[in-house]
Image 1 (tube, rainbow, N blue to C red):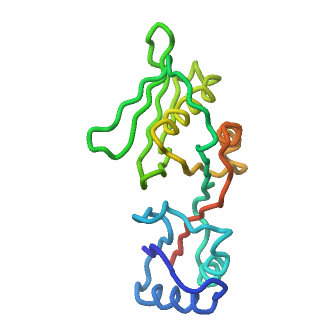
Image 2: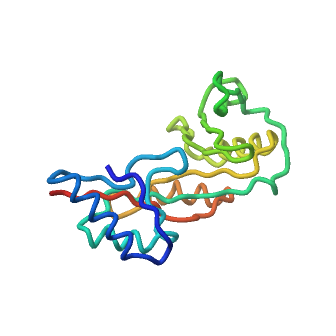
Image 3: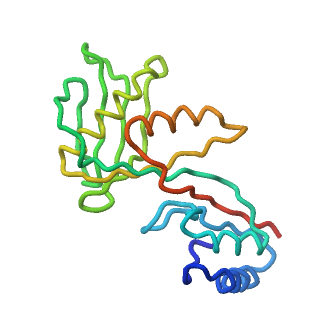
Length: 195
């Protein structure tokens, strides 16, 4: 597995030399690139920021296997609100929070999980609703973001599967996040090279 290639930007030749050398050393086997998260970044090569590495991977026989959108939201513009329909608890290991959305009668209908990345940055890892309550997705996401803002979080990032001809339903999920204030910062692609 090729986790990361680092070289000066706009240096496709050097990136291609590094990748070719790595592939040659690995021999005749399937090689995955940018398919696992690292402590510094989620899985995937940022397409806008690293176009030369993308071209070098393609020139070395790699093909795109997964496409993700990397989204960002600044929370310092949100106003605090009361949370009569959401319960928030810090995870026992201190790595983030769990938010539970409930009906007025207390019925659990959805939840969100966030991981703390740095002092004021978190990653929205998971957002789920009872299927019968899908129209309330915006409420759960809004409650989650406002709760995080109240806890001093200034930035939220998340990765969503990119829509394509085989997954058009993901467009609705992306619209939900964009309506809540997320912007697409980049597209992350993972790669595979078969022998």
